Image (cartoon, rainbow, N blue to C red; front, top):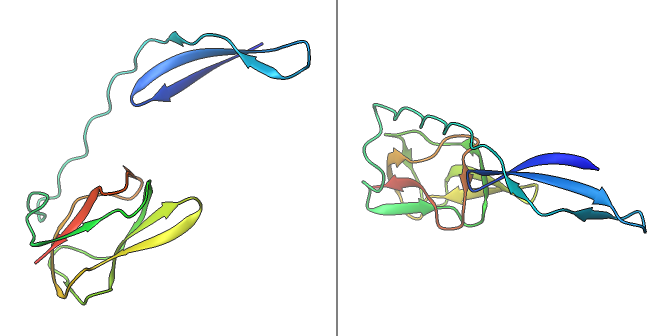
Length: 124
């Protein structure tokens, strides 16, 4: 029998896994574990205006995590330039500028988990 603590959407669960007669793992009913203190939100960058400030949105095309931020606020970009790289299913997927313009906001940080449609940056 082994005990694990698994966190799902910010809620920690204590799970006990025991073997059945076939040797396969059979999970026991989960119990809510004491909730850890919430992490402090990262401090906003002073140079970046509020999210969604630009005319064009750069959104995550798939669920994953932010692997790399290629552009910076104030940078001129061309249509198709990589703005943010998202890692999904062990692939690095560039999220590109939909139009020529200037990056107005970067709304993510390296390591942030993202869902499809999450705002990553805006461009004017």
